[in-house]
Amino acid sequence: MATVRQVSRDLLRSWGCTTVFGNPGSTELPFLADWPDDFRYVLGLHESSVVAMADGYAQFSGRPAVVNLHSSGGVGHGLGSLVTAFRNRSPLLVIAGQQARSLLNGEPFLGAVDAPEFPRPYVKWSAQPARAAEVPAALARGLLLCTQPPQGPVFVSVPVDDWDQPGVDVPSRPPVTGFGPDAAAIRVIAAALDAADRPAIVVGASVDADDAVEDAVALAERTRAAVWAAPMSSRCSFPEDHPLFAGFLPPADRQLRRTLQPYDCVLVIGAPAFVYHVETPADGPELPPLHLVHDDPTVLSWAPAGSALLSTPRRAIQALNELVGLSSRPAPTVRERAAEPTATIPMTGAFVLSEIRRLLPADAVVVEEAPSHRNDLHEHLPITARGRGFFTIASGVLGYGLPGAVGVSLAAPERPVVAVVGDGSAMYGIQALWTAAKEHASVTFVVLDNAQYAALRSMAESAGVAKAPGVELGGLDFCALAEGMGCRSRLVERPDELQDALATAVRTNGPTVLHVRVDPGYSPLY
Image 1 (cartoon, rainbow, N blue to C red):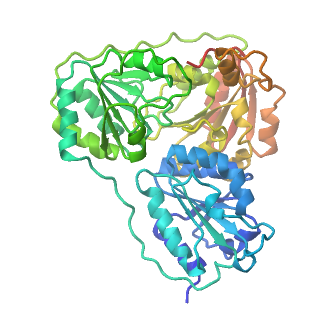
Image 2: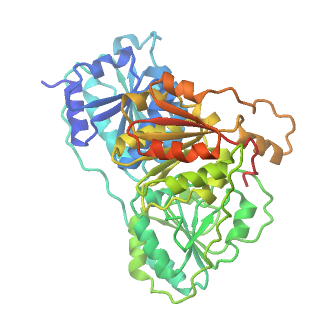
Image 3: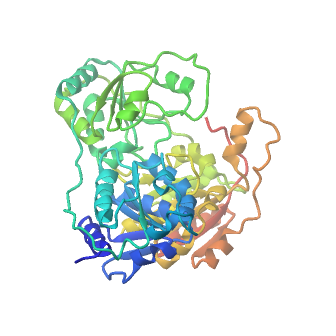
């Protein structure tokens, strides 16, 4: 009779989940025993980086990624990145080791207390099967749940002695597909768009995740609607060089209301309405009529206003494209671009980002985690890819950028990946450089070093918090860190060095770290 381990591996094969991201310990050894040749184990040196790598891999590939963590300690180390994976809606199957069942009546060394409770509420579902034979069924349920809209991570704790026990075969079921909108409700939205004089569409990360960017472009062109990116959106769901792209909604209530004031009908699709980061007085204008389309009923339940429609984005957009008429209304005014930044010493973040834009290959993927340079990125590094061209964090939890870029590169080795990260952000996931070197991931890591947590300093000043400690950095040598983990590196301090460094890095196989010193000055975030 096949063991739990054999049945589980066959299940993972049937899903195409033969790449496992992990940092193993003693309670995972039976899971790893006689590792099959058709499986790939991507080793990370810290569990937070492991989860973030799997997150990037799952988001780009659109398939579930398997994560192998060590009991409660490993899960604890990975929880920050698990929060991000949950907010990013990444389909992860997290398998954590547990002490032997015969020891669990006490509190054994390396045992996980109430293991399924530990990662909640930042997983869609978690379990520790009651019997060893039920482990494959739990994994099968987890795979279906993590890929079912709304996607997200799931967690299964497996006692160390379960893997060698007899297993029960589980049928391989296909993933649950997306679901379409209610026919009457989608006609109401289509009629509202047809009747509007000044419509707008707000797109969120789920539009890209559902491979609906081209459909969204078609809808915008058909309705001649202005298209805004949702506040804090973690993916690019509309090409930013398109003449109908209007910009990025601010994550602040009053400013957002003023931004949307000119429109008489707003369709929000694949995004919450709305995510805010800072508190502002609620004295702005009333929101225009909103129509909200999302695949998560929880998100629809807390939206402050508007009619709600439950549907996955692509099916809703495709239905609207069939229902709305071809509009003859005047197209909205084309968005004005900021002036090109000038070369200075020290360089500004805006200048570095504009140089990346000039040298970025057409098929490149950008992974970003530079909070203090986010506004500059919006202005000077527009994402023009129509699908899976940009990834960042939806959670605000640092540590995704470096390892997330490695995961994206492993999912798409044929595409160049450029990671733009701040010096503070980089140190939350620096261990991923070792994995990048070991796996020969072709990533250009551009570390923008302004010697501080500039985003925090900006927030402190905006809030009137004087003399806040803990914002000064400096003294970090990213070239030494990179070379110590097997990556090429180069220090860049002058504009004339930047172009050659970027051009060389993006056309070179394997990882390169560019330590770019930038002006410590900063601008308000919002």
